[in-house]
Image 1 (cartoon, rainbow, N blue to C red):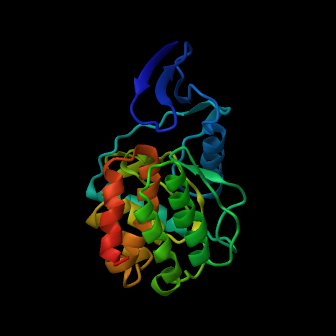
Image 2 (image 1 turned 180 degrees about the vertical axis):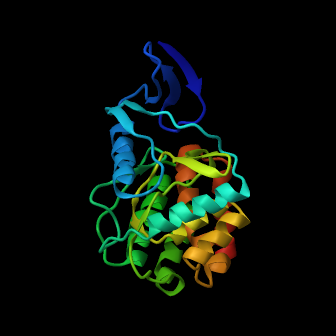
Length: 268
């Protein structure tokens, strides 16, 4: 057996494992307990069982170890691969539930992501995404109190700024560049999900925040699932406050100033 370190892995270190019989796997290992790799395995299995996304098969899991099928590919995306990603995500977002949330809490970047069922997307986003993450960041000493006040001043305005979508859609939840793999013009894998049923615009906003995909992706996605007016001008900034707060909690630093910049653009 041989073990080779791989890049990535916010929760634990990632390795390529070649067994004596020639089988090759990807393994994520967390040195400390509480990493929640069993929850990550649940999310991978859910997407594999309920969607057409290319998802690695889970071979073994417990709280500190996750062994998966190794998927080939890189995080470099041709125009055609971006269009393929748009088709895959548009298809995922067509999978609907009756309410927003999920049947259990999930994870994003190793942080707890609460998903109590709710009939209102605006209420769900306000309480269990923006408000929840801002409160946790303040308690951990990562977020300045002034920004916390501004975020909570924005929450009462969300009912005016955000529409209720036609249906709750199944979301991957963390379409960050290194969480997607491509081989040539095809997407070969989606990794590290943060699943729940919500508004697809929060995923589209995240994609713009870290430039996961560009114009070819959005043109194709818009053909399949038209993006409503106001997303680029206002809603993108509102939704990106959530992943920014996640990064404030995980990394601090410049992400705090990015939160301030978005709040300034929103006039709060």
